[in-house]
Image (cartoon, rainbow, N blue to C red):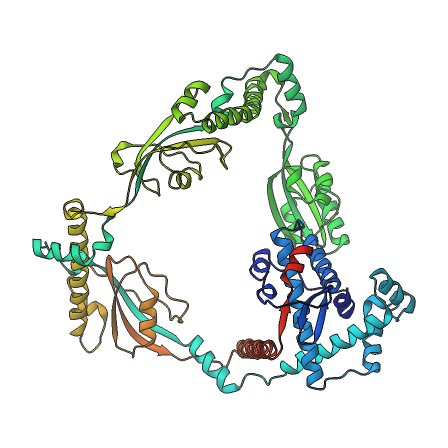
Length: 625
């Protein structure tokens, strides 16, 4: 409340949840000994005590902002602790500024405090004048005395002056702005050719010695993963639905309770034209009603016509729904106030009436829905029965037989769900919990029953484990040979490209280097460092190399997929021109100045922390939050 009163009606927005949790225990990381301390002190910053009551007030303020954003805060939960950590960190920071301000002689006189209170919108009446009664009422409602609030406000103003002083740095100098602007906006003109490796070089067959050496040098590539086999039960409500029956009365009751499922709402094809004023919209409506063409009237009056297409009630803004759905086909509406401003004239060009599917026609669908709902209820009993059987020592196969279920198996699959034998055509359950459970369970013991995210039940028993191991040369020979050929061809292709461009003529055009080859050369528009041309295979390393090159130089690098060579010739350098970009220069200066202020503030806060001891009673924080 103190900060809100200081700032008037404004309040800083709730931080994004993940950021808050990341910062949740910034203050908690500092330990200390609170022996013989005041039992109400949750933190000590130098000689300043932070009482638990102040932390509770700060916590409540922060929590309210999160709740206003739709977050649910459970006492003792991660978010609650995160907010407490954020609030405590702010109180510690405030105390550091307070102490440092006093050390530096920053003082605030009474007149400054009075002026701040008088100008605060929270304490003003409808005419913008300070209201003493409102001031005292707000203090009382928040459990504050006038003296306590004034004292705290004096400290906050002092803190602000100190912080503003830290941030009072000169604007980023021209030399810095110009240098960074030139770096960011300098452009290059280049021509490119992306040439497949097999165009530049033939495939070479390796000798046995070369394969042996390659296999030895890259042994870490050739590993067989851990494989596991298992027996499992996976059951879903749809599996049980076929066994469920329902009486005629149940079917009719379900239909009547959920009748909206079998109603296709009325839809309309709608067009509208928009006007700035009510008078213009009325004139347009009158002209169309008198028989003039809708489009012709809109064109004559300079109005935009928008075809909304086929829409239902839920597709329209609330204020438009009733007027449009009350229209007869072809008849223009009276002016309708648009929720986005201005006025609309609408016309319905076609109407699709509401369609109600009767019970007899919907009976089969109703029966399926009722059976599925009963199956969901039955899943609870199946889960309990299965869990009891597995807990008592039954195997997956025994439990499945007792419950009339069909056990399934997977044989030698890895942690990614790939089978050692691709031709085995095994079906891996699509439950995301299956593979993690398969690769953490112990062999020979049935897992507990797992409720899957897609509504099923899952239990498994690992029946075999093959540990990961290095492949032998015989097992990896085909892959080794393929990779050796691919890499060797890429090396030869790159060398061939380098040799070709080394002998370019004086014009230094890429096309002249690859005469007789099916090579296409492109010359895109000039580009900046972080806005590379959209050329398939082009890697950012090529662009970086071009920005380090001189005009006429050629860069040869592998394409992004490794299957081609990118050959690029730098044609020209276009220096940045800031003469017509005053707005861009100002924006860059502001960005650099803000960065300087931020860096200076970070260093100042680090200095304060290094100069003053900070002790946090973490046990008290955990007790209260």
